[in-house]
Image (cartoon, rainbow, N blue to C red; front, side):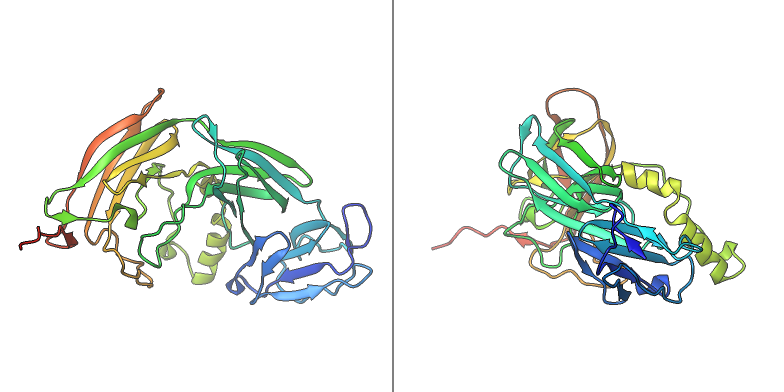
Length: 339
């Protein structure tokens, strides 16, 4: 029997589970809206009752109702005939760029780290009000990250992956309203990129160029260290959301460089730290190939270097960065018209 947070029956509550982790996740893309094609779907009756399916004890069980939510497992429900939903959480805050509120920006709230032991993945979007304020309502308890969705560009190749920008971790407890100030600290990083061939032009707006905070690498599991694949998968499933993995996820930061057509760029609110600066120039107008190895990076040219952003106020100027271009690729500058 499923009960609401106030103890009343959770009539018509929706229930999801799965036979094994290969059945994927329950995707929440807006409050109370889910994608669940491969999962086992159940619904409680008017008294909040439903029949438990026959699945492994370690597989997750997710219950949603307009008045509450719960993520558990059959193993945790053993010897229990009643489960009580938790009240929804809420996140509200203000987006600032520098000292100024920023309206009209698209923000995404995403599960901090998807884990094979969980069946829920949240990814919802909102847009900041003119005063920079935003709200994410009806949020299940858990750890998340808020990030800025890249601005819509008129140029750029189709099929380009979305780069998370200015990630900020946030934890939500049941029934809690979390208030955050998002952005507004750190300093601006500026500079200008130029190519090493005078007769070659590139579209700097075609790709996402970025600063990525450097972190200590995590030691990953090796299949050869285990007796069989089953034992390996059990260990992998446990380590997938280990404290080390969660720490890396909480501290991960990427800052997109906002480019102008002339190659000048800027990233606001970058905290002090050691970063990898990456400028990858690809051919414009070509769709990215989908495959296990991903699309090629920097097929026209690339520039990667370590950048240490010091503490201080005012912009941190990286100066002029020369990006080497491969061969004669790219668009040549048009020759003067000869009448």
